[in-house]
Image (cartoon, rainbow, N blue to C red; front, side):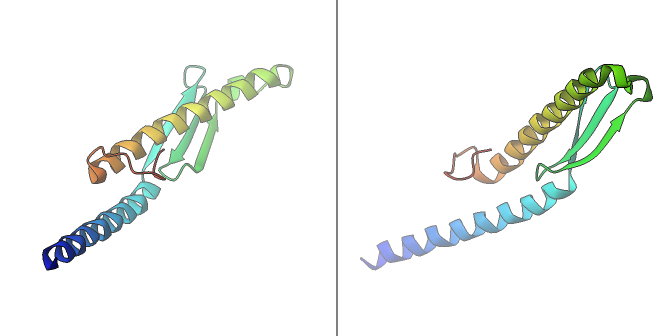
Length: 108
C-alpha cells in the first residue's frame, strides 16, 4: 500500500511541474504577438498570446466617411484573423507542455 501512496505523490509532483510550466508559457505568450490583416493588408491588427488586441493600423486610403461600413468590415475581419492566429499559437505552445493531451478547462 505504501507504493500506492508514493505513486500518488509522484503524480501530484508531475501535475505541479506541469502547472508551473504552463504558467511560465502563459507569461511568455503575453509577450508574443501575431498579426492579422484584411483588405490586402490595408487593415492590420496585432494580438498577443493573451488575446489582447495591442495595435491597429489602417491605411489612409480606406478611411472614407462614405465607405464606413467597408472599413468596419475590414477591421472586424483583421481582428478575427489575428485572434485565430493567436489561438493557434497558444494551442501549439500549450501542447508542448501537455504533449497534446486535452486537459479540461484548458481548451482554447
